[in-house]
Amino acid sequence: MQVHFVLLRREGEPSGINRVYRLYREEGLTVRKRKARRKAVGTRAPILVEARPNARWSLDFVHDQFAKGQRFRVLNVVDDVTRECLAAIPDTSISGRRVARELTALIERRGKPGTVHMAAEVKAGEKAVTAAMREAGTGLKSAWRLQITGAGLGRRLANSIRSQTYPKAGESLNAAALVWSKAPVIVGAHDTGPLIRSKDGFVPIF
Image (cartoon, rainbow, N blue to C red):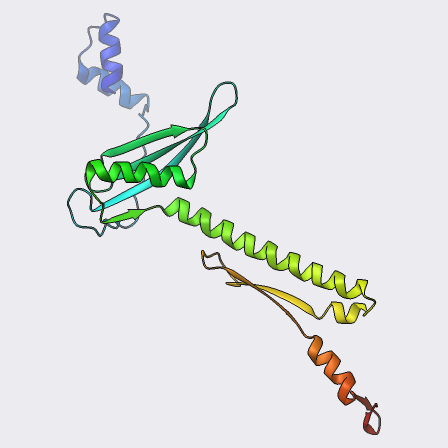
């Protein structure tokens, strides 16, 4: 309503604010109320590090591309306590050796940090290692099965080759793949004589 009063005064309307308010109420005019901003649920967990410079550094890669389409990366190093950006290294490709070299030079200038945090990079590493182990295990299983069938030993024996990636759920930097065979069980059954169930019970086959 105050806004309408100001606009009327700009137009030369001599009415006072009380008259404007009465007309405003008689016409049933209302002003939309602003919606309250959503508040975050809970509280942010503080960084559990000593409140001093170099207590913990965070490393993060930022990706972007030039107008012509060429992609580039920027390695940012931030002090989590002082919130100071200690370094910003741009390049089209930043290898692990380059990261180590830049960190070594930064430590020589600033001193050694208590800890270094690389959450995004660790997550990417876990995903890459787990995928590589899964691919290696599956590839070895397929190659082993192909050798068995190629030697004419039968599909059943080939299907006894199994593989499993660990951890079974999730991803880890310590991921591993296990490839094994149930062939000794099958071959052993033929050697000792498998038992076939019949109406009259088990009959050994020699």
